[in-house]
Length: 275
Image (cartoon, rainbow, N blue to C red):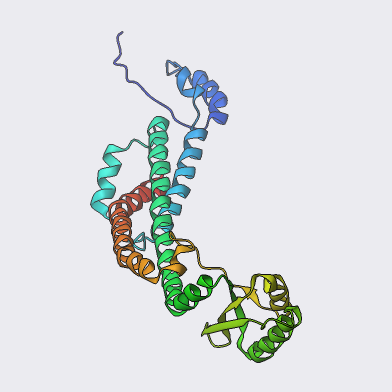
């Protein structure tokens, strides 16, 4: 007697496989062929990979500042369900590779925006100080004086200047006139930036006294122009003209990446979270 046959695939936990097969053989109603390859590749690496990807996608969504995770593009979700076989570890590895590449590119774009923002703030500060002190720097350096910048507590200024005058007088030969010139600009409510100009032989003693008064050597904020910004207010002003444009371009690129990748990643997270 010839009987129609059907293929029956039984899927379960590998740990239960041996007991399940013995029970089916005991029933004597099925011809059993084990799928060797299936048992060689367990679901554990697949599940682990999916969990890893889900966490990675969530991290990228947070980096993008994506707020619509609870309201994804369901059309995109359905499309991904059809074209992305999540039961194929090779596909998951390709997705992982793409996510890593995007994460690196996103980091570069974010870093560029942050750097340009910081440079803009720093250069505005440099330009403000350079404009105020430019003539002072030029005149004093032309006379071969040593010029330094200090961050000073405003309440200590009078006593500080008196102490500097005494120190410089003690270091100056009787036949010469003590030299000290200064100019200041406010830096917040309680501090000011003080520019000091002294003869080269008084420079070390002046620096020591400034530190004893708790003053801090004022470091010019880092910009692409470095120290040249203080020497040329016009140069820093020119840089300030193109920097906002470059910052706007970087933000536009970053926003475009967010609009492109946000919905895709949200949809991918949904289908990863379902399995």
